[in-house]
Length: 192
Image 1 (spheres, rainbow, N blue to C red):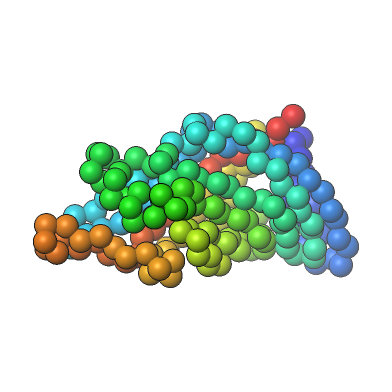
Image 2: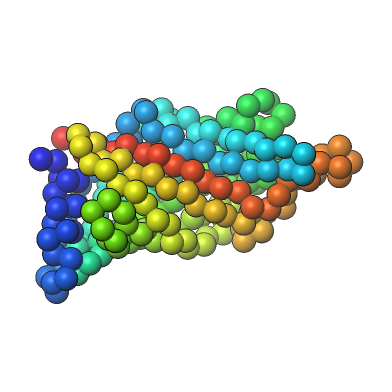
């Protein structure tokens, strides 16, 4: 089977041993994956969907299996801000301005660590980089593995943690909430 499945198997079998296994591989994200940023205003809701087809290079993964954890180095997903579509040009422009895209054109997600809960659920430690600021989050993941590894989860983010100010429209009558949700359903397959 593929190395990714091997990672999960090794991780499962070594859950409570003190042995350390060091390995690396590369994965690609399948086109049927999705990553969406959802938010609300005082009158409506919105969503900005990332064009997954823009991620066309393999993502290298360097990791160690340590007891009941997989610890990653350099496992990052870089998302170009201009690859998000919020539904219309005006909203796309506001989204780019919100993220300070002129100065910081990318969002970066770094996978730091995964801890296994049971066969299909894990907790991930992620570091999110937006507009020159970083914050760590613990995110519950659901994992299924067949031909690909399917990972899904939701990350709740307060944009003020990144010194971002929610836009106001119509002379302040429409106000965007500081809380947004990053929802992802990612299918990974190992590069051969």
